[in-house]
Image (cartoon, rainbow over all chains, first blue to last red; front, side, top):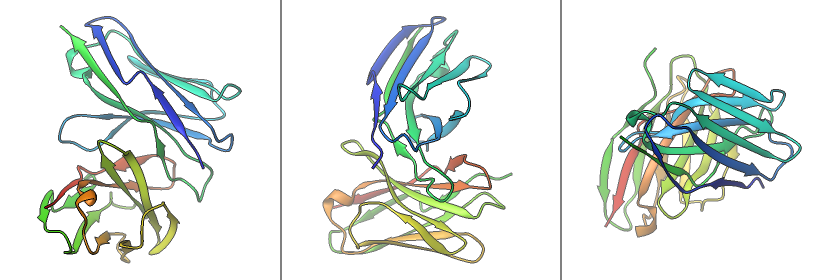
Length: 113
Length: 111
């Protein structure tokens, strides 16, 4: 089955700096890669996603890049703010009819004011 | 649109008991998936229901079961509870596209 590895497990950045979180996946059939943000006491919130036919996607301060050949994808957050502090999860899923998400182990991001 | 709702939000049960958790998906969404989140194992897929049929199942024992009703609401049941079943149980709703939206979860504590 699919295996998703995520690094780093913790990340501290100064407010205003950029943060990058990286994930690798094992199943070449995976074609959908979402990122979730989870705050304390809440469920994961979908913040951005990318499909395998796209190399990069951007939404304001957040961007995701995908390298299908190397089987890795990354989350980039620019101009970080205190409210970006949370746990971030990457995930991968397959084709229609097999959309179960396989998650990475999470990255605890702390923004230092 | 209202988001995914899960009830109850918190639950305390004793070993050996059974429990039923409920999930109401986003209006119009027909797919509901369940995930278990623990500090040790992270987020793990339990099962997915689509139009009242279980379409995918994760690697959990038969004590974990679920069902989906004609209005797309879903329930999951855990029988003969064990201490290791203590976790946050999350429900995710999906429409016609790939995006899955999670509810706030049910925190189950088994004593």
